[in-house]
Image (cartoon, rainbow, N blue to C red):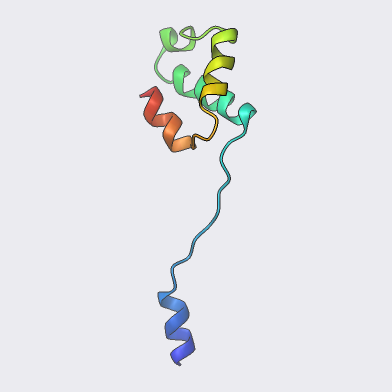
Length: 68
């Protein structure tokens, strides 16, 4: 009984790794496309690669906040 009570109160944590450069590129492109036609054209390919390099270590939530 005590064991089941302990497990129900135990906090569950799931590790989700940070996105790699390809995932960050896709995420930034998607987030800018959601802002409308002008958002998709905002970054040229060379600039997109710079943004991807600059956001190394950012989570998906961080990228959403930056693009908003």
